[in-house]
Image (cartoon, rainbow over all chains, first blue to last red; front, side, top):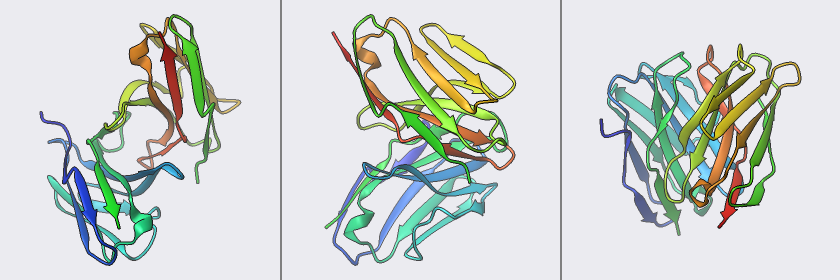
Length: 114
Length: 112
């Protein structure tokens, strides 16, 4: 298996633009997590899905952030409009739901908003 | 919600020495405690984990201990090597809720 796949790996955009981050979880995993990592705030859980259904989005910072999981093999995290303070590394992770199994992290997307 | 505190934030040791990282958690419902290693430019990767019904677990040079009463758990790395240099994260997980709360990370530097 190729592991969790994220795209793009790097994104540079200007303030006010829409940004879409993409994630393909490991086949057979039915939990998917979006995290944001910054020096100031560490690793923060934004939202997670079980069987394509959003379970907890309490970590989503503002209405500018939205996430979807239309099927078991694809998820998106969208920021509209983007702001400089959104600059961070965004990780997607997947695992088997409701188990002691580890979360497998993707390589991350480094987002820079100018 | 769950709150995880991790100490120290930075740790520097000489090659061959031991390193210890400690975490405390607040939610007694947490029942699974993984440790992740993050190398530069990569996502975190699980290195060891422990369930709430176990007090200690060891895997070669790495061990984790859990004190449920005190709500704290620790990572122990013996005979450290330069390739152990990385950021280490602890996490507390409630598998019934399906989510993990991460500590702020410890940057470990092993000097050759």
